[in-house]
Image 1 (cartoon, rainbow, N blue to C red):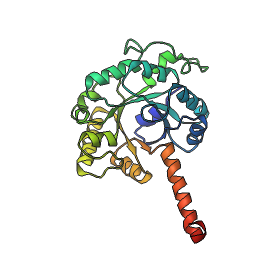
Image 2 (cartoon, rainbow, N blue to C red; image 1 turned 120 degrees about the horizontal axis):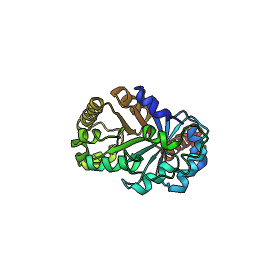
Image 3 (cartoon, rainbow, N blue to C red; image 1 turned 135 degrees about the vertical axis):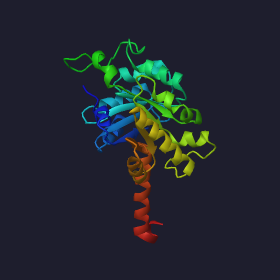
Image 4 (tube, rainbow, N blue to C red; image 1 turned 45 degrees about the horizontal axis):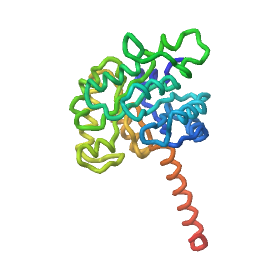
Length: 259
């Protein structure tokens, strides 16, 4: 029942993360076969709800990936339900200071370390000699998103909160908060400098840094920079990109007949 992604992160390895916006067990099953180290169900901006999250987890169970959830907000009710439903890690948006990071950790951890309520309806349903509640606090990944100037300014305090595993950067919201356009794969010297600052803080505190990327080449570049958890687009974006390329290639090769 160990968290394979956590073990890889603790060993200093880089990891690729799939991202599920589509509320479909079949889509999740397809993504889980593609070689990702983790797959995240996006309940914030994806078209996912709690029931579709459970269906995605059920579809992915037989594959060697770690299921994560990006929750809609830093709210203990949905965080607890996502964990009870089988998530091995929580990515939480818009964490700006130590108090918000502490609230996130409290929602993810059982007493005495936190305030999570007992009731792991799916997470604890698998046959094992070790009860889920005995290992959960040591295995759950607690990952605040750094997306604002406040989060950047308070990074050392956030990473000092007991239970916080690492951070995950949202480039679009970070850009918006700094007066820039919302986009992935950023090249602004200001943003790249912020990435370096955040990576240095993570290294100082012995934590990992994750980043959402728009392309495989940018993700590879960010891994070389020091990011350990790199997402590439999402399922709907990858599907649309492949479809556009297939249609474009067919029309180009067919010429006037397909115009």
